[in-house]
Amino acid sequence: MQNFGDTSQMSKRKSQNHNSNVKTDLKIRSYQFSLRIIRLVSRLPSTRIFWVIGDQLLRNSTSIGANIVETKSSSSKKEFIKFYEISLKSTNETKYWLCLLRDSNLEGIDQKTVKEAL
Image (cartoon, rainbow, N blue to C red; front, side):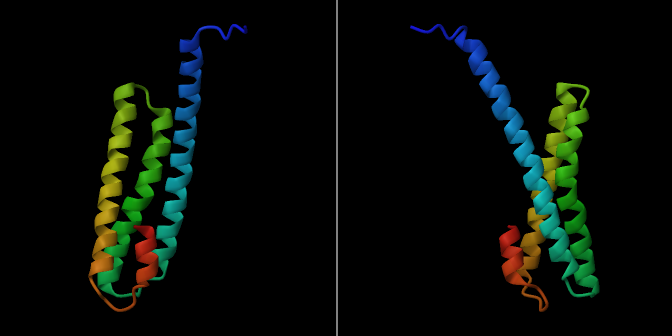
C-alpha cells in the first residue's frame, strides 16, 4: 500500500492550484469581455445618446478586468477583497448599461451583439 502523505497538504495544494486557475481564467474572461464591449461600442451610431451610454459601458466594462488584475498587487487580504468588490460593482453597472441598450429599442443597435455580451 502506498503512503500518500498528509492528505491535508495534498488538499491544500490542490485548492491553491484550483484558485490560481480560477484567477487566471477570470482575468482572461474579463479581458475578452472588455474586447467584446470595445467592439460593440465602436459600432454604435455617433449620436449623443449612444455616446453617453457607450462611454459609461466602456469605462465600466474595462474596469472589471483592471480591478481583477490589480488584486495581484494587494498588500492585504482586506485590499484584495476590496478590488474584487469594486470589480463586482463594475460588473453590475456594466450589465445595467447593456440592458439599457437592449431595452431601448433605438435604431442602430446590433441587438444580437448586445445580447451576446449579456
